[in-house]
Image 1: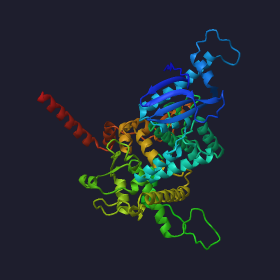
Image 2: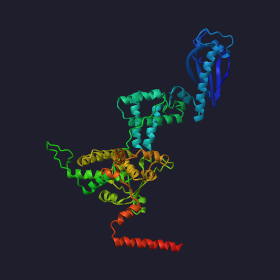
Image 3: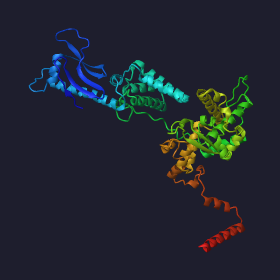
Length: 523
């Protein structure tokens, strides 16, 4: 934008422009004169809205007579005695002035023009709020919405941000890529994992976007991206390998059903301590209970423990005649347009019925299926529920480790394994990805991308088969390869016919011939 030059004898100004209700002028700040005959005054850009003014200093001084010469200069006949001529200074200051005008134009397009918003955009400081207070406002909103876990996470990230950068309320909105990089350096010094850094930076990005949306930061101040001068948010290490195959899941289920893993009872008063012992018989029961809950997470479409804890016998359960559960993923309950979250429908297969028979509460409308997982926390609010589930997750992981050590497994499964195992095993069995996404309750916008984060594209068994080809070892020559394959209806029929006698096979063929003749007669 190019502004017109204005010249006034008493109080010369270089440039003037108007954007909405705001008048913008580059002039001298004469609010504090000393009375000298040829006094220099600070050069500034003055913003005027409804008789209120804000002076933004440019960091250089000038006399009234010199400013008049700069304003009237055309460049003709000027000699360069110093760093720049009056005409060159005029053009430089015009570029500066136009940058301020463009900033006000952008502010006018994103909200009402106020001197506070202009000052914040130019200096990063505001009397009424700051980047930190906006962050705290978002945390308060999450708590009010019942998102205690998210609020705690945002608060923890804020504390990390303040600790490593020294940023405070007085700094307003003076945030840029160099400050974020200082934060990253601090996290690197403390050996924060890349996944943790990613969570921190995504939280900060959310706050930055809120500040831009409310006009506290300009869109050009956005500091995240892949270009050289931007901050790239790291992606955590892949967890696609965190899964158990079908055979391993079957083995765990068999151990639960048969209770055939034996744990010694350890007397705490004894000086000797045996590995993987328990204090009482009740401790053994808890190990098998935790194993059952891990299996339930796997069967319930890889749900997390929060969803399993809050699972109820709702109306859907009774409408389906006890054949399926239905719930809304806690994590996504406010992510859809209608605020109802992503629905998950879980068919109750036979292994689930065995676990429900052992640990499930009596089916009553809106009763919790596994009330022992959450206890009295259900009456105490969101934070109490989160704390109880967090502790139960740790209990399950600890007890499963005892069991897997006993059966000489080197893997220590957690709830993450249940979710990844559900996705990877169905994918390996050629189940449509659309079903996997729907079953896991992934948001509609990018189901495929989210689901693929949980799926290992090739199982270890498949990789063994393919790499055995390097030595000419075919699949049928490799007894260790155990790739589970879905049998076709034709193959199932052929397998069944192997058990038939000759007379039974003849009878079946006669029936098939008769059906073919009947079909031809009907034409």
